[in-house]
Image (cartoon, rainbow, N blue to C red):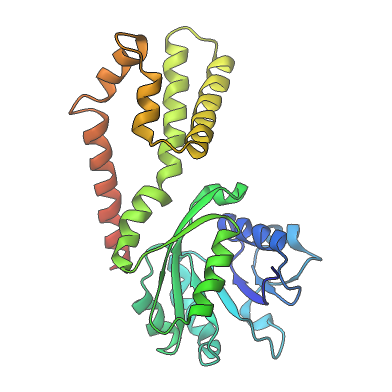
Length: 269
């Protein structure tokens, strides 16, 4: 499948991860990247056109999709400059956290057809998980195009209510940070028990990565896989008795996700 001409606005960590995935899928060479930082655009030079500002776009350029991968605080400056494209009916695909469809349409115009998506950082290795919401006027073909773009960096799911993107941001968007924290804490705990630091790091990283791979490959749910590791009256059971105490992980995780969801709602206004 060849992807049609796109305009990518912003080529930071997530934008560049997405672009790499699209190039692997066969992105049209007519596509354009807008990125003011030459170092960020450098890896893609020669494969498609890279320009520093929207003012440098080729005359007559008419992308089928415009991907908004800039920081949310830049929306008020960037979106009005893209409003001229909205009347032509391209898909606007936004990965800006906290920017609701209604707010973006206020800057782009009511004709703008917007899909809002929340990918996560494993997109960099094509193992991301993205949840998306289609705003008013998005045609079936445009939703399919958005799905193809997002599936190029991992798995994609859709919701019918935009408000669900707030807890999605808390769980999926922030989830990699929680997993990395687990690896940190496992490493620190191993060192505290006398394991050499280098071995502790290798062991923690491999354990987290291997467990994730097993979970992805298994048809069993996480609770069942956990029970498979937990021998009655064994060492793992003793550890889980601490971690799964009512005031420990179960309560802390619920509080953490609730706090992140509340912050996502605050940022979205």
